[in-house]
Image (cartoon, rainbow, N blue to C red; front, side, top):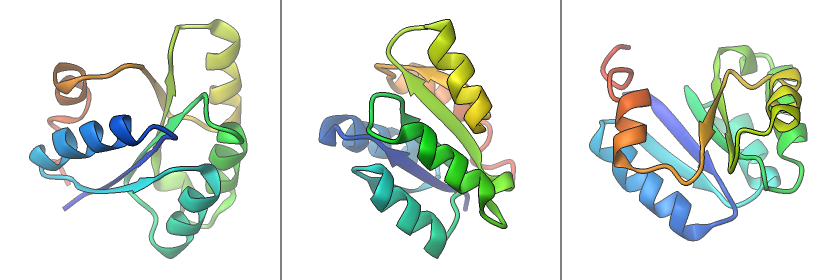
Length: 120
């Protein structure tokens, strides 16, 4: 089973995302801030990670994960509220694999990740 982590300061976003992704057969964990996410990634690197762009030190988290020995294998999705080119480029430079627009819902998460849970 593929491991997924949602890192977002919003309890609601984490809970909704966890419910949807769990139904897609991911093993989902949550982190409320960058420090908690980094600690969890050091313990066990997820296959997929959503990082909220509005979270303090979001870019630092992405760069830190990429610097870890197995951090290059994690697919990191930088979650932004609007398609702001500067934010998107900053996320890409830090090491984000791709982007998600927030708020996401079942339709979006299923379209992006639905075929990936069983692929591995």
